[in-house]
Image 1 (cartoon, helix red, strand yellow):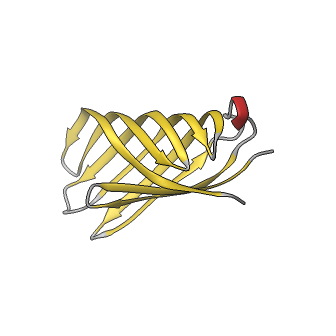
Image 2 (image 1 turned 45 degrees about the vertical axis):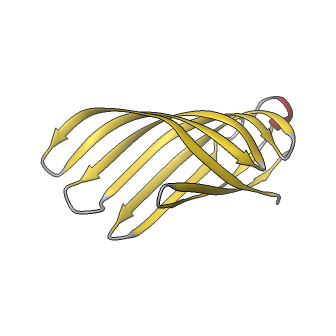
Length: 130
């Protein structure tokens, strides 16, 4: 299974809190990104975040549409995100939505992880085309 690696920058972060109560704050966030490396392109993402009252307690889930190239093949696909963070431990993963690929990425499937190292974002995506 091929592995795509690289980095991305967050170009836009537009939070809209919609439920701020004791225990946690829920927020819709629209995010725009630029990818570099084996993925070259841009994306738009909409996530729902939950930030708890306890220090470093958070989670999010959402969907991202990537437009660009994967190892030189052009098209689009949708990623499903899930992430949690607590007490310095975090997990950020994504899965390609089956049957969401277009163009030369039709049939793409797989998943991977995001690494956030003090604001510097890198990723790997293990995928198959077929």
